Length: 168
Image (tube, rainbow, N blue to C red; front, top):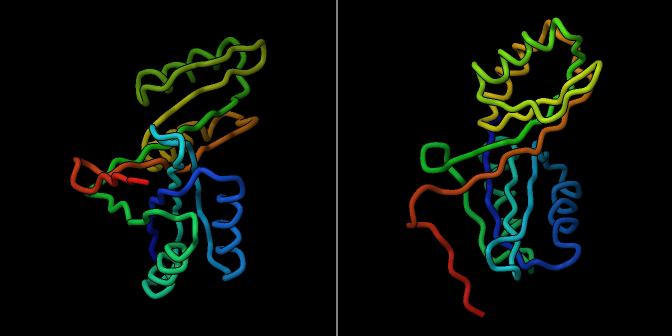
């Protein structure tokens, strides 16, 4: 089993995300993460999907998704040719004593931000690769994580070679 990051450029229409995720569920394919957002051109949405399987399944996924009506472009974002980022928000139980320790981990080691402080907790924002976020979460093993939200990978290919220009 290996992971593949697919980037789709699709028409910005209602139900497009549902049709794409429905294709995965109907065929029993796994989505590890999915992100979607409108592009600089509001007619299109960029979707980044992380999926896993053997080479045959991954090739089949790419071919099946490419056949969908709303899909304008699909290509793999290879790790050495792309930039991936993920956002993570973590609510950690913190009293006055542990707040200082957590703040040091967040700001000095991981360049994160404290975005909310309450009497019994704080919320941390960290952005980076999945590996960086996983390492950060391991550093919090000695603290009580109350809530956690991860966005999934968003990515773009490096350079201008694979930029897609759609003309309608």
